[in-house]
Structures are given as structure tokens and as C-alpha cells.
Image (cartoon, rainbow, N blue to C red; front, side):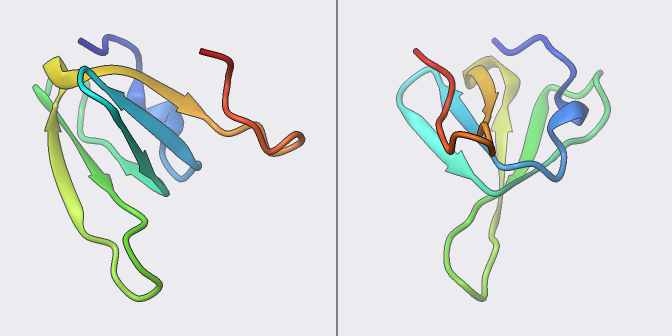
Length: 75
């Protein structure tokens, strides 16, 4: 379960690593820390950004893209 401060990632290109697989998103939309879930808006198409609710228990990590190198953090 993710236990950090997810609001630090709001508005950044992030990768949400779920317990089963990876979900890439454009912008994280996060409620308060006491919430049991995180709302994220996915980069789905050029004109739509559907919002999903993901329980914090399913999130293993939130990683940001290094804009200088264009790489994700090493696994």
C-alpha cells in the first residue's frame, strides 16, 4: 500500500505502479491524506481524460518522469 504524500505529484507526469502491473497517467488528482483511495486522470486520448478511483491498498509506488533524461526511475 502507498503511504507517502501523493499531493506532491499533482500536475506532474507520473507512473502509478499497482500491485498487479503498471498504470501510466498524465496527471494525478489526489484527495486528502486520510482518504482510502486516490483519484487519477489517465492520459487516454487527445480529447478525453477519464478519471479512475484506485484504492491506496492497490498502489505499490508512485514515480515521476525525469524530464531531463526522459526516463522513469530504475526498478
